[in-house]
Length: 394
Image 1: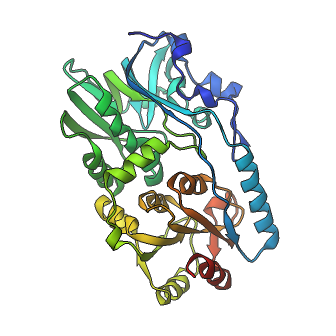
Image 2 (image 1 turned 135 degrees about the horizontal axis):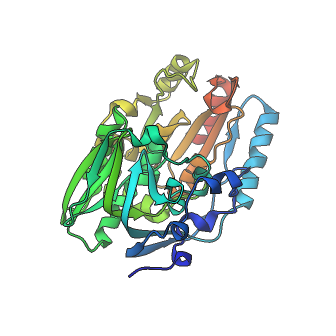
Image 3 (image 1 turned 90 degrees about the horizontal axis):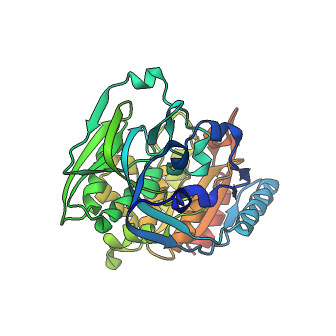
């Protein structure tokens, strides 16, 4: 049954909210470059079951660091974020779009001014960054999906080149297949030509229903796809501080941990990278190993190995980054301790700890950066780390 535009709720619930101190209001710029379903005459058919998720409480963070001013500033920011707790629920629904094009995580539709990003398929914070497809984009390699015996589930999002966003924003949508009235489903995901592509396919196979005829296909991010009968699942999170407990619990409980293996301490090593380098990582590793920690590199592990490793841990220490999103597989009351550069205010992981019922800790470290604080190199004060561990692992 077709639904009217005002019934298409999607991400519009969050249009005029503030997140992490940054006003993500709709702007003239954002509205110029997006098309609403109403303005384009796009037909949506609602399928499946709506998923309503209430808000949840956030834990009091435990903060350490050599700079008392920075710690006080960070603490006040956490208080501010907590005051802005959004009480209305996340509403995620499944829709069938008769015809659309998809490109690098985005859904595009025909309009009088060309192919525009579909307003309803982007979270508010993303819309301003989405531009119309230009002639160069239209000249990219094409793929056509139009078999009338199949529907096509687009399992991707704007940030899907990042493992953390894949795990939180895209992968859980596989669950929606259970409520779809179709037997033949092709899952399409975006490939970026690195090791994450293999992890994506492995994770899809781990969670997809086994009672349907399902085919998985990875599409290079620089390919433009024309899809008829596109199944679109509306956003299941609001970056950075609202996630769906329903979907996070689904990821955790589908592969339950073995309680007899619990008790491990792990240090998540961030390999040498261009940004956010822990300059004294070897020194930190040596110290943590004396405290019974095992050093791991999730990027070198299969998806199943990552699940097993994190689900058996009772204490996790690591640099704030995508690999630490694996803590969602940890059991309730796990202690998670993040090492982060000063000046980087990122509540995503605090929110993840809240929805996972974990104890949240931060060591705020001296850092140097020229542009964004999140990209700066930093150094851990071992005295602060030892103080934090004495509380986390008494």
